[in-house]
Structures are given as C-alpha cells and as structure tokens.
Amino acid sequence: MSDFGKNLKQLRTDRNLSQNDLAEMLGIAKSTISMYENGNREPDFERLDAISNFFHVNFHDLLGNHSDFDNAALFSQAKDSEHIDWMKVYLFGAPDATIEQLNEVVQFARFVYARDKGKT
Image (cartoon, rainbow, N blue to C red):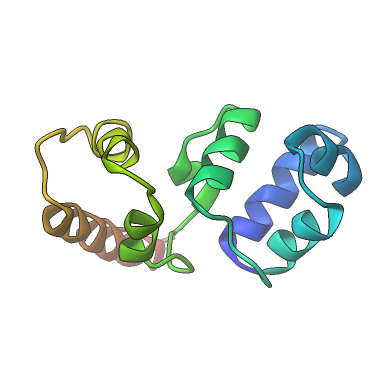
C-alpha cells in the first residue's frame, strides 16, 4: 500500500466513513477508493485536490513521503497554466518558479525526508 493509500484509509477511518460513504461524497466509484487505498491506482490532480479539500489537509499530508508519485507526472496532469500556477503558489510558495525549479525543490525535499526518516 502506498503512503497515499495508507493516509487516505487513515483519514477515512478516523472519520468513521466506509469506502462507499467516501465514494458517494466525492462522486466516484467505491472501487476507485479501494484501488487508491490498496495502491493499485493513483488520483489525478483534480481528484487529489478534491480529496485534500474534503479532508482539509494539504497535498503533502495526503501524499506522505511522495515517493509513490512522479512529480513531473503531477505537473503534467495539470490541465492548464491556472493549475500549474496554483501548485506553484499553494504547494511551493514560488509563483515565478519554473517547472524545472519546482522539480529540484521536490527532489531536495525527498532527500531531506529520506535522511531524517533514518534518524527516527
């Protein structure tokens, strides 16, 4: 199970929601929730945004260590410049950053996370 799947399941069960309850609230199939939680499927940008908004958490909390998500793929799923601009501001606080710079930031964040994870 991916960190995203574990985190989603934890958020769902903490709120005493069944997979069916959550699926209905998000307007998706129960099987999609099951696949997310089992690591068999990953959400696209819009679904990830909807889930994080539903649970009032940011992407970082929802995704965990991000190792299961290709950052470039996440950027490429953004359908237009408005989504990319939103990610630049909301996720990185860098409205003028290039995609290459954002990828570098994420790679560094993964490094720091991996380094610090070994210290626990």
